[in-house]
Length: 300
Picture 1 (cartoon, rainbow, N blue to C red):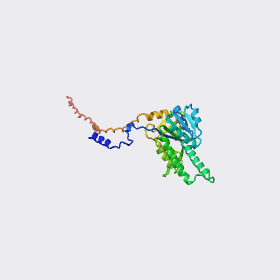
Picture 2 (picture 1 turned 180 degrees about the vertical axis):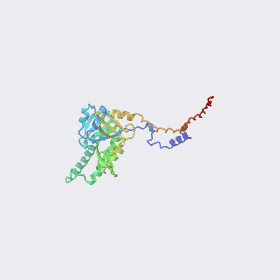
Picture 3 (picture 1 turned 135 degrees about the vertical axis):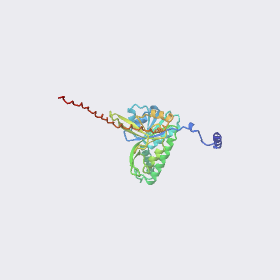
Picture 4 (picture 1 turned 45 degrees about the horizontal axis):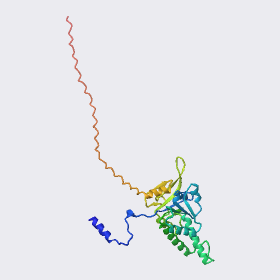
């Protein structure tokens, strides 16, 4: 009966719809790594070596170079450079890279806003070069979303980096998110929702040796936002590398551990403690009567 219902359902599916079995479904990875300056975001991107193309929207490639990275870097000092890089990647699908990194998304946004203000000044020379008008905010927010969607849709894995910013939520609780401006922290949350993985990278020290190591947190922990749709990096990975992350994602997801069954408690009947024996006092032997020997009177 179940098989006939499945066959009936498939026969009703439209033939021109893009429907595939989930076992055959694949898509490129979209990952966002954020953290404080100096936490090692660019170094992490460089561990992919020749499989990585870094679109450097800020100065910092030297950090990956000093660690011996063989990745390729594309300097994007203006928005025109970023747009040119996007079009090249789209028009050359056989570029040979497994990953493209935008380092960083925070400066990516600033280059976009600078371009919008320059365009506005070209039309009106009296405009302030540094203060966006009301209509400019809506422009760059919509434009930012459009380009993030476009990069995510490319047939290549995308890695984004961003600095971190701290804020209080509506309930007064601390919240640490990627430093992406717009609608309070609404655009930052939208960016996180557009990613498969959002992780916080930090530098820590071992308690015993005080040796430094890096921890990639991919799960919401305290004020730090994190998520992992693949469920392969949670809750964290120490000293991560891009080859390790890629290998974990490409493997089958780890099975969830079944909750341990509660062991039934047997009611053991307690043995009654033996009654204490009442000490028996020894009976006194009856006194023996002493026979008196009759005394004979002396014969006169």
